[in-house]
Length: 321
Ligand code: UT7
Image (cartoon, rainbow, N blue to C red; front, side, top):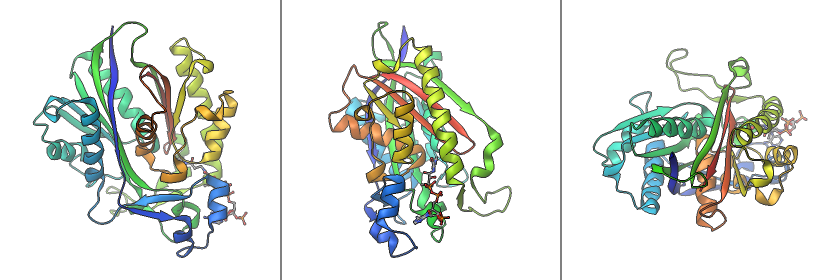
């Protein structure tokens, strides 16, 4: 059977690390509050010369290198971001040019923090139709550009970064590697809980992120537990079969609560929110690359990727590495 197989991962972070103590000098907050309520200790913030496309390109290069794939072989690039370099063209096309891919399909998807899951499921579908054989799926964000740095309830929560995977259509055995099942969801009724108060068609400005954190938290735990059960059911597996969960890194308490709902031991959950904070669409591929590179996630492991974000949007994919 033809499956989409993750053959390489990569990631990139801005040069500048900002600690909770650094933030406490700018807004009325403390390291204690941030660590206790979120698990975040530091985040990386892009400088002017670091953009969503430059971080994405660096992450993509690292993924191509680990996959042993040349940029010229890539026929499809899907980049998930809510912070594109420009309103248009798509940031994916900028990455395509920077990598020197020379052709193929390139476009962005926008599902905020679930963007990488949306991009991965879309790439998987397109690879299985034969549209391309090798794809780059990227999540890249510079959320620091849309934060209200006066609002302590949001500015301490986010960071910048990028993660990427090379996805290849391969003929594999039933128990072989690849994406086994994916589910995506959206419910547009909750826009006001998490949104940016600007945009080209409304205010004509970029705007700032606004969030009702407590409500988002509540929805996240319920929706994530549900979509994980769906994806496991589709693949005929149960929670006990999972080797690693790579969740969207919004809040350590959401990770704990979701794992508890599914009876998953905390040791199986990859946590990077302490180091990277919430990097929106970048967080899942960034955490995946971190756990692949430090040797935790190995070939053959059954890995659950999941995320929930503005919209609301949410989704999950079960992948045999
Ligand atoms: O990536 C997309 C998905 N996003 C998420 O999943 C985020 C989900 N939500 C969360 O992670 C949490 O709700 C937050 C971390 C945003 C907030 O944690 P919380 O435990 O829900 O706190 P809260 O909003 O209920 O605020 C508790 C108190 C408030 O003070 P009062 O009204 O009780 O006096 C806040 O003003 O904490 C205060 N507070 C802060 N204090 C110090 C809020 N932000 C800060 C801060 N420093 N940075």
